[in-house]
Image (cartoon, rainbow over all chains, first blue to last red; front, side):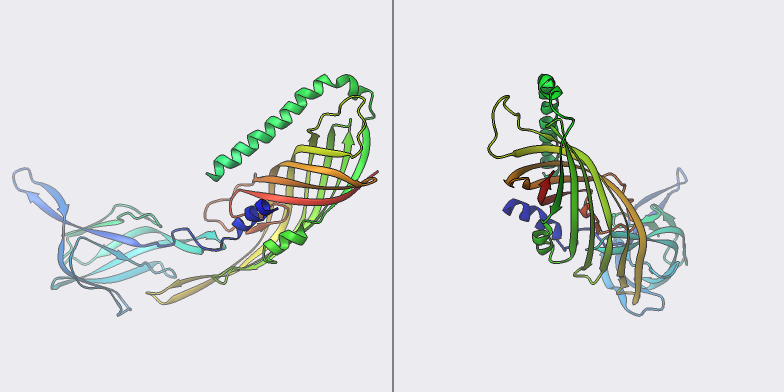
Length: 150
Length: 228
């Protein structure tokens, strides 16, 4: 009876053990033109200092963070567009991400999460040279979704 | 680790069943002298008295069974019941369901009768299989998604029907405690046959199967019955 009680009681674990952290990740890269071959090469870029906040939200996600080579950004769960203002040292750009969301049920203990598919990324070009989407799917997997080139 | 344990027990029970089938070939002559249906049994599962307490009153189940003893070796079994659950998780999500379920299958007697030997107490050690099915509507409500940065809160409710199938591998005993009155218990390894699609809502509790946190779980029946 004790073994059976133990087996049944194991099923009542109410702690959520699944990863629920969904975040959009952007990496910084430097584009360098080789004048002899006329081909661009890229390398990881460490930004001296960075400030990031959402447009329509004054709360800072990054405030004067030093020597940073990637940033994690929360996408809006209730809208299909998320805008951020990014200040690189003394130059400011805006980053606009167009996305679609999907509701994912995990379990009674964990509830639901929203995952995203990134359609388009648009930026101003003051510090940023260009942007490339490297992974359209935004879920709990810790991967880089866009490359921001300087 | 639990998967290894599960499959080991499954294989062990299947081997027991297979060995009985093989042993049955040796006793064909004895069986041919017995009636096809030896007795009919009606049983009531009284384990919910204990299991409802273990489940902290979140789930309940009532079930009964009818079985027919065939050739003094096999039991054809039909089990019918009604079960449900009403649970609020620590995160505030509330789940509710109730519905009827049925299982059908057979047991093999694993004890070999000694020819000519008289039994003072009738007892059966059995192994068997069941196919189970239930159809119930469930509701999962107050599923909240909050966004602390963008300051948004969404609240979802899932209210939908769910039909599920599963199989069970069963081991148990039955002992005659008074003339024609039997008491017995069985332990069951249940395996869901219905696919749970990743990301789609699914019921926390399936009537007749139990808590569906994973596609396999354990069940326990403690029954009282009468044989005719």
